[in-house]
Length: 490
Image (cartoon, rainbow, N blue to C red; front, side, top):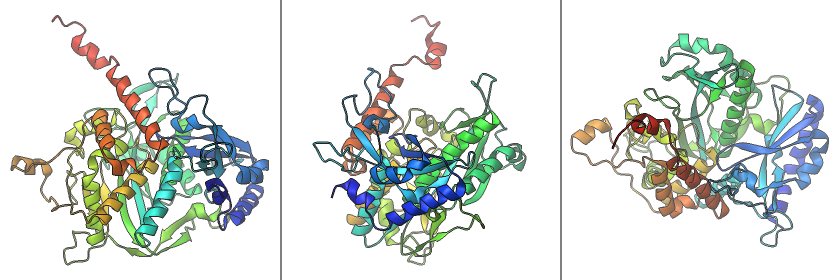
């Protein structure tokens, strides 16, 4: 059997396909978005009438390979990743992700896994390696099998900014609220926006737990409960779609750009992680009558054993498994930066160090001046991740880092308890993370472990896309160039 055939016939899938049909009929859904994730984390795919659900569930739909690279061209006007001569991928829906779209209840949404075309001469029906979502599932299953049932759970903290716009839709360059961190008054000014985001999020399976106004204009952070790494990545992608819709409804801009303003904080997406054994999926009863989707969308892994918990009297230190995983992440921080800080603009955040920018390759307990911190007993937080990252690539890369740390017993060294800036003044030699996209891509190019998180065509597409982005920046005249050199006589 091909990978595609195995995926379609995996145990239990037939039942969920039938459950989706029941939901389609029960909820009156007439149209479905079949979506997957591009190299940059964009949501792409097709819309298909719900009458065709069973046929698509079995046979899938076709779309050009280049859609995994957003169907964008590079600076030489060549399509990134795949040319027009490439075959078409086959998208197979994962029925366990089916849910109603709350802003138009005639519409459903389902995530898909991508495969090579059935007629390919080379590996027909094989996993499409430029499908970052499919890769994450495979990498997590391989990791769990190798490391005796360990599974990665992740919680993300997505900051983003709500900006005002002119009547013609262009940005005014201003945030909706003032840059006052944690001020309820500024939070309240955005209440109509975030309450609608929360309403839609709950309807699509996100168990919202807290939120606040951050310290940039119009900057909010809304959090949901942590969960399995793949399901959390799906929820982060869903959250971004929800914010875009709410922005359309309110005539403002949902900005996930990392650093639209200098002199105030950027938008990070701190990623909290832990490895667990055991636990069971349980439906979170956000809806007491009818779930507007299949149960799996509203399920979270609960219970089990957190292997990152301290196993000594020092409650600030993770257990042995956690320390080895920190060691793996510390070893690969340079290459990981290319994934967590994946745009040219990402490095405006790292240069603006007065705003707790995570630029130093060190770790500590509750120490926000480090790139990695133990944020609470049983979990640690990777801080050099921003609002533009692709969570599927990040999840795979973290799993590869953990695997290296556990397999090779990597010692992370002693945690830093001092303010890293003061430690430097005292003589500590601290390495910085890459401070440009070009430097980070070079570090990734040298790191075969992190490259393995993007197997075969995935790395080719990622490197082509991001290297072209860097070269376009280097070849562009900016406003800074004009302001600095326009009237300058040599």
